[in-house]
Length: 107
Image 1 (cartoon, helix red, strand yellow):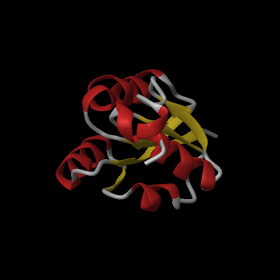
Image 2: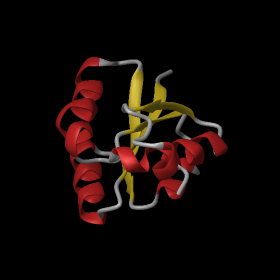
Image 3: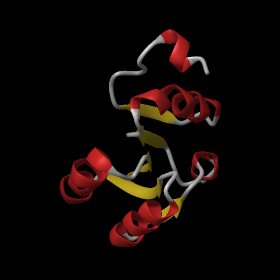
Image 4: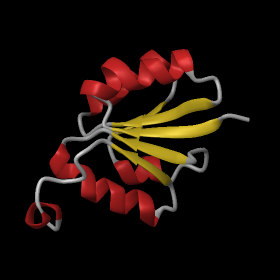
């Protein structure tokens, strides 16, 4: 049984490296959904890798077939996504840094 992974932030490093490498190299992890605030980017990546796609992270987090999320959004958005994922009781892998400042992250 594969560990089910959702990806929040489907551009940049996630699209170029993480998603393809997980698909190619890790047989015990299955990406089941991707999310990006840009609906066209989310759809492109979802179709390319044959997974569900969303433009709202809560919609992705509410999927029953996701054990964990990989958060690859811009730094200033990390904390919001982490808190949403934690509230949905998902395991979390987040790109560093967690944020840029306490003030920015608490907005």
